[in-house]
Image (tube, rainbow, N blue to C red; front, side):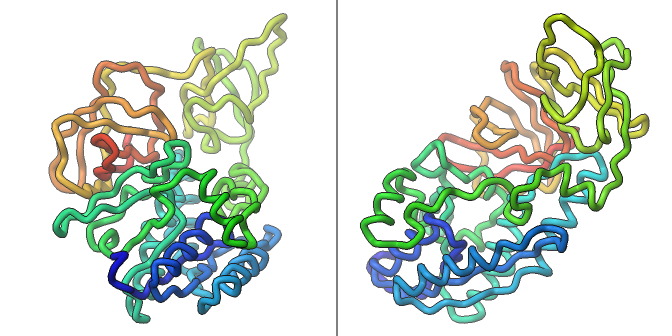
Length: 352
């Protein structure tokens, strides 16, 4: 790749990581085109995509590369936002970033880039792709604090074959230093947080525009009413905030959501998150990137310490069993991502 110049369309988000990705690719001699991917944003939110696009344009101008804007609003609305809202309505907790990567950045954007003459697309994700004689492996990013392979588990061989992650082999602090040395206008820009179209509002506030809030009871483990909440579907297992405890206690311990009943619109709280040994989950929408090994580890949450699991699968569904470990129970809708060492082997959506 480094010795053969290619045409690469880089998803310039307006952040430092994608800026350095474009800088490195141009430095390697490739024909680089910067592309800002415009996604959907609800009307009730203050629109901030223009500022992100302006930062992306500044980077492209600094690097003296062509700049395009790709309109992915329709795909993002259908595949990410509508999916997320529907999952919450069902009482599930989705991973919108997984769907954005799968259907937008490495879906419609990749399709557009290839049809427009690109050989590859590139982003600022902290992950790596390794080509082993035509078999593509997805690897963790070298910076373990920034590794984003968890959000890329749905990518298939065809997508990986046309994808580059130029910053995945470097720690974030070095990326910022490199950006400063190169004079990139985003070198000191803070990292973005959360779901990209939400801005500064939280998930519950966003969902309240689509799902009516309905006050309900907070129960303790004995079924006694101890408080109120704004709607059971807004809460996830292990959550510590967002509900009101109305009992009077001299010394109040932290309370965690340990269960919820959508029909009764109640949530149950306890003094510790639910933990179960040897729990078994059904996985739906499975995607396996490479050959599964006998020794598998999984993550149910981003940055969670991987734990040993066994997997049996047949077609698009699988059974995953947690082995000899004590971990927090995970909600339906979350991603179970499989690893063997630093290789991400794919995963599935938890059905609990």
